[in-house]
Length: 502
Image 1: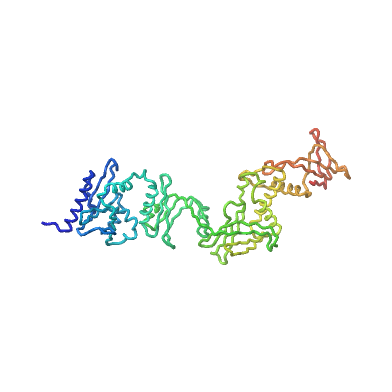
Image 2: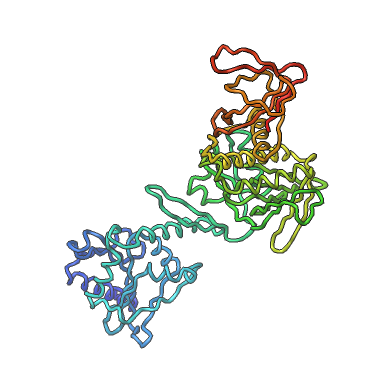
């Protein structure tokens, strides 16, 4: 039985290709799986260390080269198969004059992914410069294709890119970018179009965690938290990445806020010269409303939330102070506190303040009365810290607030008293009994019950010494009592007595 012409041409082309490789001393065999590849080739073992490649031969008796090269027809499905094959695949085209041309199938398919989708055949343009008889040129190309991955510059990045392409093939609605960190992979999943949604199940560690996540979704706030468990379903990609199994997870929701500014002006109907403070903020939008929040590291922690799910809409205002900044160095050099304190003092005196928000030339004014705001206690704290800063500067003190410090009532009283004294004001003091060393009387003393005492007062805040300040205390209606300590005396107030720091 005679072979048909097309089979004869194909057999001769395959024999010619095999003969070329055998002549070079390369081991050549048929692909045992017979899935369309004609030859399995192991090139020079000393050079390529046992690596191999596959060959599919296309022969046609009438095919002749032209200035634009020649073409080789191939099924699209075969090219997609080549793309997924871990071994390099070469297409060898035989022409009527016995010349063999080669083409790297994976490289061509990689550059023409959009053309190999669907069914049918496609013509591959062969480069007439790539003749198989040119052994040196072919081996130079193999050097790049078969080089050990650890020797190839950019190989890890290329492998990550291919890994991303492979994962992206699981779901056309998602694309995946892969990066490596040590021995682990990191996946960045991106929706192909807006409106993509999937069910997510989360198991929170506590109610605070759950509330933070709700705020992130409703008001657009960035959030970072640890979860007891999380799983994502609705896509074969999630199954491939094992994300559809409940497992501990860390969730970070990042959003780019819209930049703007908030100016806090003291007074419900402030004058042009009213003290003010400007805070850089970012605006975020969620499913139920919007949030404005101070940006980056700042002394004032500002937040204004508008809840549109209520009828009428409800605004929630928060103003705080980052106490941790005062633990990083001397309070005297804390930036921004003087401005914040001046504004807070004026806002307390004026019983309110105004929020002036500005975003992309859009301006909104929000009046806010102290009597309706939870910020009044915070304003007092800022005022007192600002006063304490003035005291430390006057005393040239390096006083630093330790982390977690809370000012108690005695601290606030001491700060107020010393601030007034240093401001030149007379301050009444409660001194039922007073022990001093040395007495200096006023020259115009009217009675024997009036004394003027000079003392060096140690300033104690939060149980720590801020510094020492000389004070002059006027005592009226005090009686002198002998002291058991030699060189000192005790002054005790009688009915109607008073003590004034002057």
